[in-house]
Length: 242
Image (cartoon, rainbow, N blue to C red):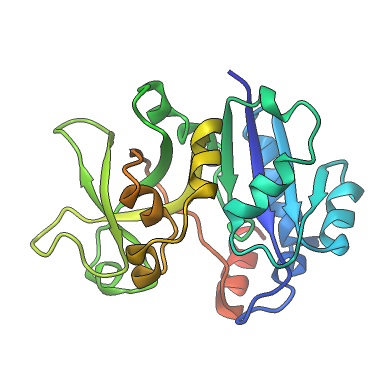
């Protein structure tokens, strides 16, 4: 089965302008993310971007980048648009969506997102880690998953995603990691769906898939990479990668 990692990246960011080009350890952040993807050992890594400056940075280090419409509404749409420009992209069985703002991700985590797809009923796979502190549970910036997980298993079915505390009781609670693997037909189906009511309420794109009856399974992993959304996050990422 052939796998391609796509990294969607765009310049517009309300909290951190020109975020993909932010310097981390002497490299633009998007290059740091690209390097983590290459270090994962998977076959193809392609940056799907909205600006020539991002593409030029990737090309400078020998990587592949595809320019897409800056007005696309989501990273998934950007990946799909990039796919249409790639010769022989029909040969990709699995498409991994690796966000362009997680430069600290452990490369070993990336292939693990493919594990749930061993079940032929699963259309989309993602990652999560166990939450062990109340602050994260109550933080609306941390996306939680209601997860159907059997004892002693580390792969389960996603029932719901929310910024609120779910479940309402004592847990366990799971922190969603924004890394997805799609079967290629599932990505095509997802892109063609209209935004859903729950998606718009929670501002979580993956709820569109659940509302449409698509199956998302989750692989539990040990660590959660640091996402970069604010200047403070950027400073933390610089410390981690220094």
